[in-house]
Image 1 (spheres, one colour):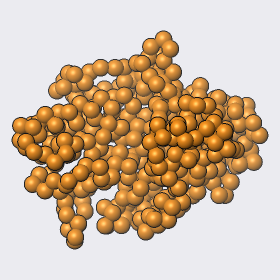
Image 2: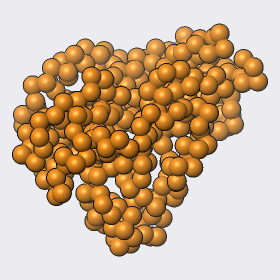
Image 3: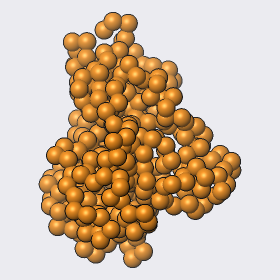
Image 4: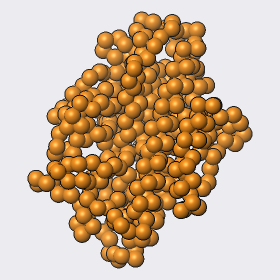
Length: 366
């Protein structure tokens, strides 16, 4: 494999904080993490920038009504982050499609059978997850969003990370780092994890598709916009996931943690912060990156440090011109808490080419 060596069960790296890793015959749950299938989706509309209203607050409000966002408590009385009494028919139909896979997972691992996961399909979540209306360099209007597999993916990830650690204690007493715990192909829980993580990735992709549909419907129903259409193809890509791929003539498990697949001609999304540009990109299939690129700028500091360093005035200045929250609860997501996306794009120009450059005008946060 050139100078790049796959990881086998007898060749374990020193640390598991790498952002992407090729392995031949093992799955490392902590390498994927708990936000399984987290990713981006975007679609261009037929709207032009000059068709957007001067006051964008009603559009932000329409999105916030259409998509539950924020923390969830499984559909309880004051739950803002999930559907409560009535699940939309489209969402219920998608859950019915996903249900058999979920039941297969919990039949093997009953401890995972907690929560009302149909209630979180088509919902945003919290933290760095967002929904944006953006304008590109040609004045076209886009809808873009960032979310993943919500609570069920977190439970699956946490459960199998812990299970891998338990299994490894019976095999290797001196593992350099507990987060290197893995399931080897043919071992007791390997197939269970591969199925569960694949199912959670499907849930995440479906979650984004449902949200996009809900957003577009809400914007079409608004009296602030003219009638519009959306492009025939939306970009929908994971950046926390694992899948089987062929590289250097070998079948490998490729984990991308904070990375996007950038195969030859494949479209991806690289977002900036809530005050910076984002990019629709086309992959170049660079073999030495295992056809991958960065998923975004990444944090420049911890959430706690951002809250200590930045004031509300700082945040308001950094997000000037963007219809978004300006309160203390989003200070940890202020643009200054993130790295410079332009430097990131310059560093990976050999991996992707830019198709469109987007700048948000509306941003919804959980």
